[in-house]
Length: 241
Image 1 (spheres, rainbow, N blue to C red):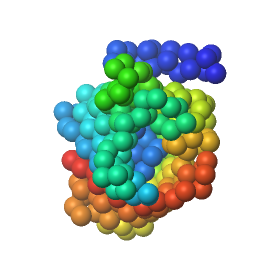
Image 2: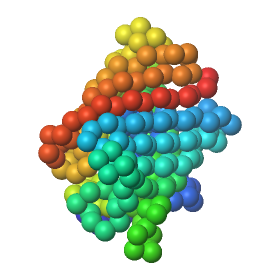
Image 3: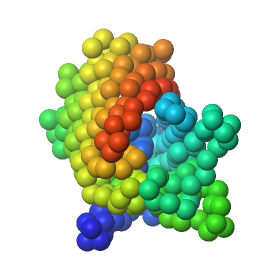
């Protein structure tokens, strides 16, 4: 495991990523490995509804040359039973919350509408109860293919995540996703899956409705690999052309 994480880290350093480096803009949970346009911001806000409510926010900025950087505020968890936000920095049975991360991604075009995306995110728990912030990370390498002028996209790749990020166990695993423009930039079918017996290991499926060409709204369902629990997803993305 340590050697696998070292390999991922070496790849990111080779890209020249000097920032600490998970979810750039995603299908639901798996990064799409598309980067923000040069000098433009993309923003993605997701809410998950189960027996508690979770907010995940991502902001990315395009640097040009198929490179982006950004920040994430993840796992902002509200429990209606107690009418309170939960902080977790004491057990790795669940993912730490909330998390404040920096992210970075670089893509390499291969021709024939293939490209590779290398990136990730890393940071710390935002509000430690123990008085000590602790480091977390999630890094990945994705192979992507688009069809019919980006009307259809598929992604498959591998990831490595810290136990405090994933919850349950530190893991190297598989991730995949797709975006099918049934009616392009009007109605899309989305789906993704992250392997592993942990909080982040999920299957997600749903529909994306374009309120405008730059503002799609996705509604979906997700199921956790570990315990079979399921919930609803609402995701709004702003991505200027």
